[in-house]
Image 1 (cartoon, helix red, strand yellow):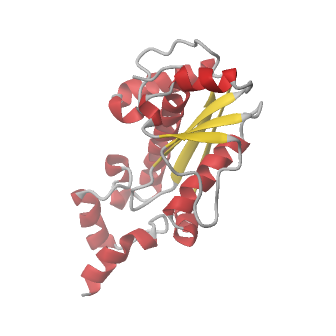
Image 2 (tube, one colour):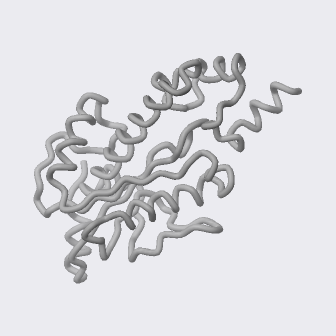
Length: 207
């Protein structure tokens, strides 16, 4: 379960505005990758807060509102499918996370980054930071960021489902499910598909 350990350690080192950062949607075939950055007041109580993958959708929606109400600062950012194709997904993830941090008011002076990567070949985290493997289950701030990123992306994919109803984005959120591949076979890629993620499907289709 998440704790305040990493935030307290950063505070002891002299940092006064510590944010947690996480991203959502690195793996799907369509849609943007999202990231969130959150600065929580120390000791803020958020019932059921955990890694977003461990929380039901209904509860995620409830916690999403509580985080936005209780946070000292929060920011959500995204990187489009087109940018993902141009940069690659690792660079896009780094860019999304830095964009989220850049949107914080007041700004963070230290960041706890979920995972073990802080740079790609073209994009890097430039805010002072440390990486925390499985941080969304270990740090309250990262767990909060994981909820904001996941819920924000899911809601955006539901909007895309209205623009491109034939792909059923509201059901699979862009992930490579059986239904999604069936829709791709029937309709081909949309403007919001990540073409670099479809190379095996394209090869199979034209093979």
